[in-house]
Image (cartoon, rainbow, N blue to C red; front, side):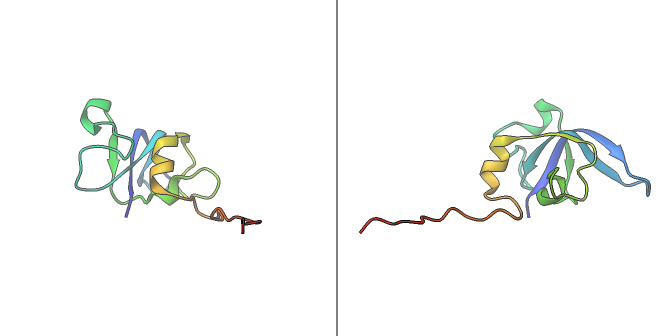
Length: 93
């Protein structure tokens, strides 16, 4: 599971802490994001219980306060939810 590290936090109506601001993909057990930022030096907060797919502004359920999604982390995690994979339409012989 790819978790989330974010630059800010907010509380939803139920009082649960959610990511906000700039979000990055993070593997629990490591001290850096998938794009190479050190969590402690960048002052990013960890959200181990929040999945990367849930903070995507187009489809995520916890993306209400997300302002920016790291493009390098998005590329490192692969395709986003709902996207079709690339396919050649007219292959060469």
